[in-house]
Length: 299
Length: 267
Image (cartoon, rainbow over all chains, first blue to last red):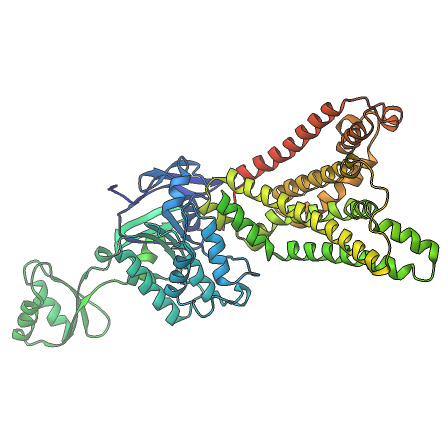
């Protein structure tokens, strides 16, 4: 078992004078869903295109399951499934025929039964006999996911997988992605939707202008950062709380205060306030949104 | 490889350019004998000439003439489209992330294109000859007339096959370089007339058509072509011509390979 399913080390990619990705390094553990977020032009697609072997790094290394993408592309191709940002198919062929055609080009033989099974998985069985030119964007996206899964790859690269899907379709696809990861697959997923990254990913890579801004576990990033209390009068509450050891309170607009309680349990804070004659009407754990972190990291 | 060849063939079968190229070739092969019969009604001299043309081996020569004109067009269309369609539909990335060996991918494309061009050419000629035979049977005329030695029937096809191979190779190479099947096809179609236009003493040694003609005449008459010798000062042996043709075709395919191998194709 390799320590990292995907390992990107000092990866730089230039297009002429433009540096699309600059000394990017990160690892993705086996079975993780790693989201790559960043504004347009951050280098997400360049990174994906390199991991799947379509582009070569200018410098640095990219390995998948311990195999170098540039040096051993044949092996890497066999263990990677790609869902591109805008999937294209042969429009004059049916969905099923497209899938079978791609199956025929796969490094490993794929049975016709596998195509039928995947069409069922992505809920395209009814439309499988229709030409792809009649498919909606969402249907093409689902067909692309089926194509990515043809060889049952242990690593999936999903570039904007829910782009073009309606809310229900996006919800279903997110559930499917989670179930695929639960089966042990490693998933690298680029997305512009921060709520999607928050709901789906266990690890987050934040890119901006081709550089790594953050590589964090989503659970750590979204861990509660303190308490919010609605109190009256607020000035008395701040005075009482700041008098407690290891507690720091600051005022917020209205009757709200932000409290960094340290190791003091919330119940002790409430008891101290009530004993001091302060009305406490609301206590809530506070955490900054992913959007807040993203804007801080990319600004 | 066999699986990929089969899939490559199956995919092209429904691709519009291949489908319509094949259909129009077959339609032309089907219609010409009928048109010949219809147009010569009421003129006995023309009718006799038409029936002679439709009788074997005249029908084979007729099919060959048809292929001399149409063959390069279909070869250019198919060879350019077999790679150009992947750019047009944006499907290269799908194939490249599956078949990381570009050598194998291009080999499959070249073999499928060659097989398809050959199939269309043979089917077109066969249909023309069959229709000719049916027309002759319908009017009660003899099906054959003065059959010559086999080499006089088959050797003239070398010229057509050679031209089609070069046209296809040029069309595919230019399509890969320009990523445009339209430009590739035009380049392929223009290949024969452009080279014919620059066929001088100084250039003859490099012109494929000259070598093809040289090989044909050597095989048919076992001596140097008087035209090539006097007009173009061309005196190569048949084997030397074959070697030059092989080398030129190889250079074209190698160029196609090098272009494709180094090309960055992304989704």
